[in-house]
Length: 638
Image (cartoon, rainbow, N blue to C red):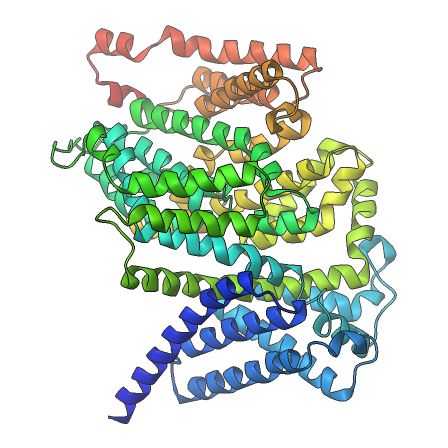
């Protein structure tokens, strides 16, 4: 009896805290407070909700859970009660400040390890070790002069540049509101419309469901901004549909993973990293989404082409093709008559209009949310108190993970600021790369991918942006371009083995082999590896230049990326000549899509290699092979 009462009380407390987090974010929009105070309150709510929601394995685990919960009240409650006094004690903390600050760092490490895994906790611990013992490193490895315990704890804990820094501000001011908007759109049928329209346009034939996965992920990405959320929203429908038409499990999961990973590069939301970016750069949100529009469009166009190639000609499963029935697929007319269309267009249209007119980001999101709720009232998908309650609880559940990650990022950012690593490392990297921009870009890209294997992509972006972006800028790249480059590189880790979280999520839905899924997703998502290099050397891709220049450069880049996709799509029975042709397509496509346009000789070589690579394919078209030996198209090209 007592156990059931305890479980009921825990469930009630968990739900109330899940509800309190987004409600506080909404309240803060109307009544913002002192920066240190409001961020500490968000941290208190998030950490408390996390420890309350944990399910301990035994009594000892339950005791630690309660102890950590109480410690959270002490650590963040102390900041709330003394928020106006603590900044004045930075550098001269009292003994209580130091003890509670140490407890706060410990608590964050525990919460990060339990909530987000050992990857981010390990990276955070490494930065702390560097902060405490970095004075023993040589200068060429980033060694610093050393800091006392009082200086370290006061910088990390007592001001708004460490744990309670810009990451927590971005979480409270921007991420929370966009996450609530996304959950509201789900509740009023906008995502149902997206899936229905995608299914109506592409839902027949073997190539239909895969292309539907690409389109639906692009549309969902315009409002969700979450790779993992995109996988679960879209993948639960598209992966079973792909399986029904004979697509093997690994390929179906890889298509969904590659498509969903593009959700964070698709304007206007573009994931949580963008909100960190606009805080760091102090730029208008609309400037970021305008610059990101062509690269995101290129990604999904080339991805759709690559998917079509693999399904239509080369990678189709030998399993029988089971076509859907008319009852399974809605008509385009029915999809467009879905009331979710009104809520989707209303929210997206209002948001884009307000941002284009450079209204404040928070105000734009709130007005778009109000417009979405109002537009739903005349329809059967209207918002109800129950739906609104569910949207708030769901957003609160996800905000807890985001807030805890931002606390860890505060420790990392505080270390970078205190030690001056953000200014020393760029100089060291320029020296290591001998001032060569392509080499520096490759090193930066690899650093983003390696970090993204162990920590969330938004945090990988932020970490590398703090450390490396200025080195790229010092070699002549625009600041926004450098940050977008790092952003793309960090997101590439979502489909790059050995971790590839998006591929892992899709594989869990498809019940497929994780490693095969990951490598297929990386091959399909190839544009994410090349597009950032392309827009560094071709700023026209970021909407700089005349309309004719932008169109010409975008077309040339698309042709190059499409050639690489064609080259990466193999045949079942490869020969030496076929391998050579594929290699020519890959190398030629890279030379067409990445180097500067003034490298005429390089572009000519790229065009020639592409022509050499595609010639054997044109001479041996599938229908000619089928007519000659009677084999089926899928048998020849798989």
